[in-house]
Image (cartoon, rainbow, N blue to C red; front, side, top):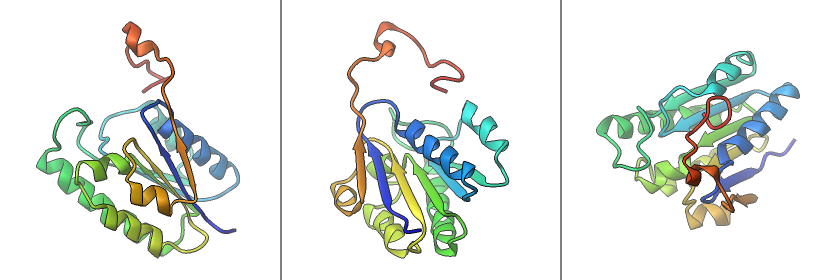
Length: 171
């Protein structure tokens, strides 16, 4: 099966959720999935669920927390660089039919690695590898190179009414 490049971007909620829905479908079909979470280094409920799929799904976090509203630390930069190198190896090996680069757009936006490096991952991937890239602020070069781009747009959100992230729903 031919793999494509999908991008989920935009200011609205649901980018990671959409990618994880695809992961669930792929695992249900017996495909092997690798998820690299850039920027993130916290506990989320999906990590526990994915553990139950560990024979098909691998998830690794390449961040020390979630710095989206502040500058990345040297540790965040180091972890992102290590993650990029690991993902490059994973893609080249071709053993995972689906590779998800969660928040890679944010990593690029904060110069943790370059858009050219991300585009290189697209170029080196074997034809059967589906690549999904999430995060707001997707670079124009990525949008042009992708096969599918979905932009999430916030119309209304209860955060504005003071509702914090709820376990099992938003975290």
